[in-house]
Length: 90
Image (tube, rainbow, N blue to C red; front, side):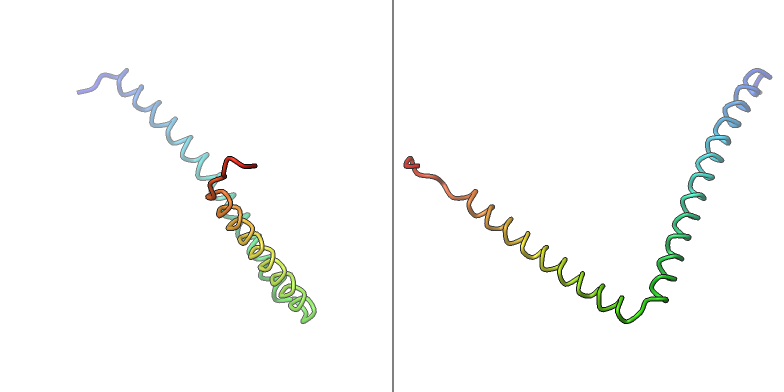
């Protein structure tokens, strides 16, 4: 059987762990609430979107995809050039 001091020590450790868990739980709940608020705002924004907004969004996405495609082409070209072994003639 445990002594009183051992039991008190275990109780202190358990209380400390409980405080840490409560703190972490509060932090996670706060993050969850913030994400719900952001998602709600995003849904609301999309529901209130006009046709002009939709067209603008599609144009911006097309420009973005074009930029990404060009960036990939540049990267591929650089990778090919990197693989070429240079002669002694510069």
